[in-house]
Image (cartoon, rainbow, N blue to C red):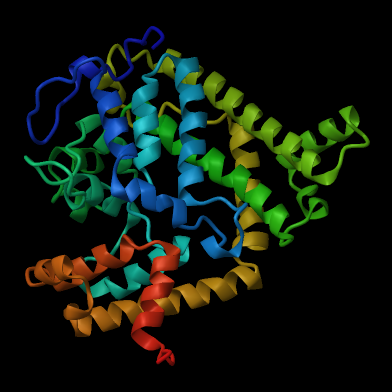
Amino acid sequence: MHDLAVYAAHPEQSRGRQHQEAPPQGRNEFQRDRDRIIHSTAFRRLEYKTQVFVNHEGDLFRTRLTHSLEVAQIGRGIARNLGLHEDLVEAIALAHDLGHTPFGHAGQDELNACMKEHGGFEHNLQSLRVVDLLEQRYAEFDGLNLTFETREGILKHCSPQNARQLGIVGERFLDKGQPSLEAQVANLADEIAYNNHDVDDGLRSGIITLEQLAQVAIFARHLDEVKGLYPELGSRRLVHETVRRMINSLVRDISRQSADNIAAAAPGAIAAVRSTQLPLIGFSPSMQQEQLQLKQFLRTNLYRHYLVNRMSSKAQRIIRELFAAFMQDPNLMPEDFQQLAKADKPRTVADYIAGMTDRYAIREYRRLFTVEEQPL
């Protein structure tokens, strides 16, 4: 680990874990968090949870697992540039999607609608619920018992109502404070990763074209550069060369702008970071505008494309009908969930569905609603 800045999160000064444990040997507290996340059941399931394209549509598209690894890689690079704790950024990045439903945002939106009368559903809160409660691996506590700093970073958004129920990890949403710089880095590394890799997957699928993307300033600038250097380059390498340049330019911009922001604020320690009104990690104004243009392009041309809408519609129907079936008869769920449902049926059903992979949800749907002839 390189030298840490005074305003970084220092593991020996961590605000601790919910359940006290002996200090780790041969690794720091944030490494222990990262290692626990990687060995969790929820992390392994990310391999079969979708980003934009449902898992069975093609082996080359991003999944939540590959996305999380890409966020960690981008985040560590930014952290190193700014003197922040790379292991903490990595832990947050690897855990940030643990609570995501099958079928991406379509699945989350439908499960939230199903849970409207029961407190709603939000994947950031669910990720925290996974690491605090739902993982069952250790003899002395539920969950993974992560440090405050990792839990703080996982919780990117939270309503005041939910914040009041979360104890110290929810306080910043009531006090209008900020999380650690490492949490801020992981948040923007997530944005860099999904914007640029949705471009790659969108092109691979044929839903968006190079001609369309040539109208987007940040893509067009790097596409022209690559074409100038390699006029005979084939389309796949052309895309990869363009996307990697986009990511590099975003990382460099965020590193420069954030260094300027930190220098102006001059936080002497992490406590000063948390008391700032606005995030210190951010893009320059011009790059922020380019990022916004790219986001809007993807929303219009990829996320709302009729082929994506068709799969989203199927996904929402699967989630909706699974939820209704399990609410009507909790005994359709595995035995451990049946027991938990006696205390809080709606939340238990939501936990069960949110933990499913894409293909497991499809399989459960077929088991419940399809009558197939069985061989004698």
